[in-house]
Image 1 (cartoon, rainbow, N blue to C red):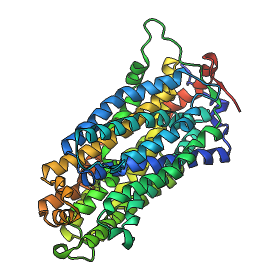
Image 2 (image 1 turned 30 degrees about the vertical axis):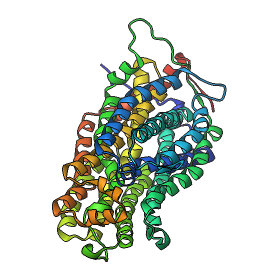
Image 3 (image 1 turned 60 degrees about the vertical axis):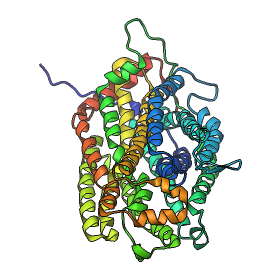
Image 4 (image 1 turned 180 degrees about the vertical axis):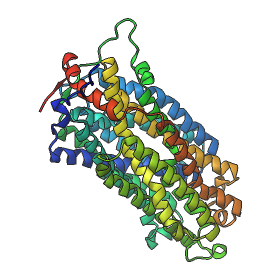
Length: 509
């Protein structure tokens, strides 16, 4: 039997479709989205727990309920997008239609005083309002997020160009997230603000208003600057015996493994989401005496500790994002994911031990940087792997579920944020930190932070060290079984172009 010839690559695989200006426009839109999304993902727990001082169990159940609803809402949005095409395009209308509602809801989410009502006075109406805003925000956000991150799928038929566009977008979007993460800490270095008794009440509304005013117009730009070159027919009705869209997702082993790895990687959100909590309660004091710290000194110290963690996180995350395009040519996506996760986990354990025994956060900076590398890798590479899995599923089934596949990624990201929030609140409960005392005023906040014991400080510090480390190890496990790589991937891509022509999928120049 003669040696089997390798399949020849289709012309679409090597052709460049997207001009640099369009790639930049997509990335700038991602930056705008990152400015706003990071408001929620990084600070909603601190706002709920330390500003509104809501009941911890209420926050846990709210997060879990919202994620259960997302399990319905995200795939539903994906199926709506896949089944309907407007005269403006399949994906392009959604960012511009949702930008204003998202802006309004984001500002409401971080509001303590509304129409003269103090929302920290926890009436039943307040809890209903908080829950409604949070859940509706998630639904509206999904309506823009799923189509937006599906756009590279329709911008080009070249899988390498698609990966670069997605990588570029995720990197620039991450810069937007970093700006938002840094802003509350930057405000903490302004003496005329930190000396105010209501500093924690006003810093988050300032952040939410400024980030939405800047971010949402940039995000809406994608509706006007992006071209959908791949024309996918509306999802057809299933023939008798054909699997449903959701069954196709669950039967696609590579996609299931990527989704599972994404869920297990929830700890990557802890470095940003838990940073303000660690800054408050982990017991690190820079240039001040814990026993005699004033309100102004404590607020300034929170900003210093938080900034150290966030800057180190940004360096590791963006450093990884910047060099990833060069690594794609040398390493499989799976290899990059596994290697970064295991290396980051080791760095997290070292940061825990070194930081705790030396009480010197500066010594831990290199380990925080290394631990943050997987943040950049997972944020970018997991999305690209989802695109590859959609190619594989299309090859196997004949269906191209672009938006439904991206909905899986959206759901995983929100689920990860929810798990991070639950982990933070669970730690408060486990070590008996009673944030309800904050309602007694800012001086009570000072006494609460100063009165914590070593065990409580250690537990809070573990939120940005041990918890992410364990999560990263778990993330690597399913990826060892991911086999859509090498010759198998090449064969699929080589044959897919011809199959698309048979199935009525056209590609414009």
